[in-house]
Image 1: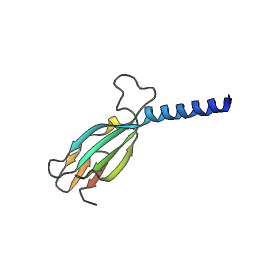
Image 2: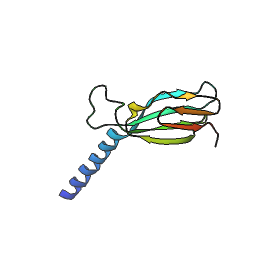
Image 3: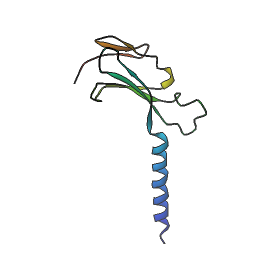
Image 4: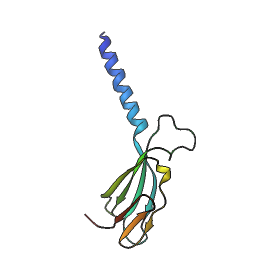
Length: 105
C-alpha cells in the first residue's frame, strides 16, 4: 500500500476534527420586546477550554430579523465581554460594543 495515501487520509481526518472542535456554536440569544429582531452571540470552539470557559473565547455577535436573515455581524475577541443588549423600537445597543438600527433588508 501507498504510505502517501495514509498520510493524506490522516491529514484529512485531522482537518475534519479541527473543524468540528473549532466550529462556532450559539451561546446566547436575546429577542427584542418591540420587534421581531434578535441578537445572537456565537463563540468559536476552543481546543483547550477548561470547565466554565465556554464564553471566554473569540466569536461574533449578529443581529437577525424575524426571517432569520443576518442584518449585522461583528467579531468579538472575548464573547464573555458582551453585555446584555438594550432594545428600543428603532435600534439595539450593546453597551461598549455596538449600536445597530432595526431595519429590514
